[in-house]
Image (cartoon, rainbow, N blue to C red; front, side, top):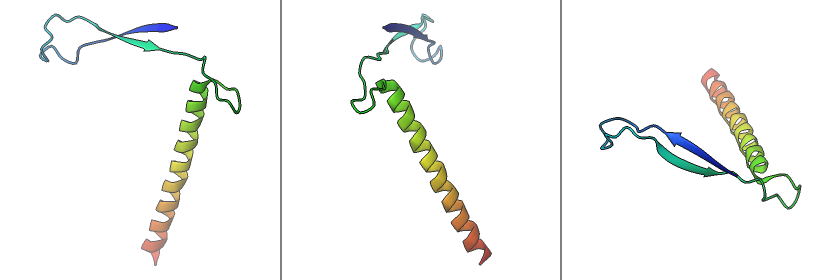
Length: 73
């Protein structure tokens, strides 16, 4: 399945005076699956991103707590 996405030129002075839209082709596929769970690969990537984001937020919270404890002593 193909989606045509058109992007505006960054500015009129970047060498492109024709003011045309630059086509970007994005190919989205759900055919590849995770062998373990059978979920589509895109869903798997989204899940991994969410997990990574959550663990980063927890790490940041721990750092802030340590800093506040150190500031109080």
